Image (cartoon, rainbow, N blue to C red):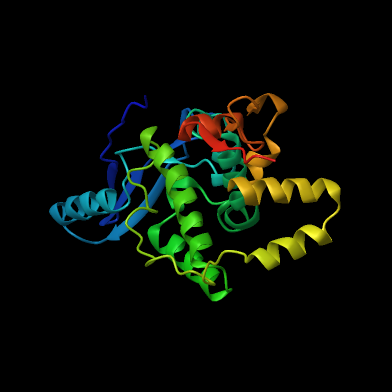
Length: 256
């Protein structure tokens, strides 16, 4: 855990002008606390009491002397050991790949070089609004917000940032791009006739047993109990743990 360091800076008076000199604690790419070179700000020709008041306001406004600032770039945090460990412990393989795809294609080009401490709620809202204007589905925009929130929440747990700026961002309800409907029997037959043998078998199993494509591709011969005429669905091709997390699924095998 990161130890907090407190400071009040150093007030200096030269030629009647007060100046504050201070240092900023940062968290580098190694995860260790580092200190930048000393910085300063001039308050002007004011009284000592007024200079102290301005010093306190400045330090509080910029969070100096409280929690160290995470200078690690978002992309470095994503690819470091911290974020992957937080995801791999809780998410299945397919979810990990989905998160990675969203980060690589959308988030990294915008926030990859930005330090964790410099990502603000306004930046995230502007990013999501731009995605909506580009025509992305509302569900995709929700996923982008959720991925950023989970990553930044992990950084907050490490006490690298004071708050998660992706939280409390309201996007409204997810809107369906088109209404869902079931295929008619005629459509099922037409699609099956148009497919070659391999894909036709996958399509037929998915339709008749109501399985997802990952569940169909994860099936094995041993999953069929011919005596009880039951098909056991225990895994997904996208991740061995996905079916175990949701519980096993069984489907009756119709008679020939």
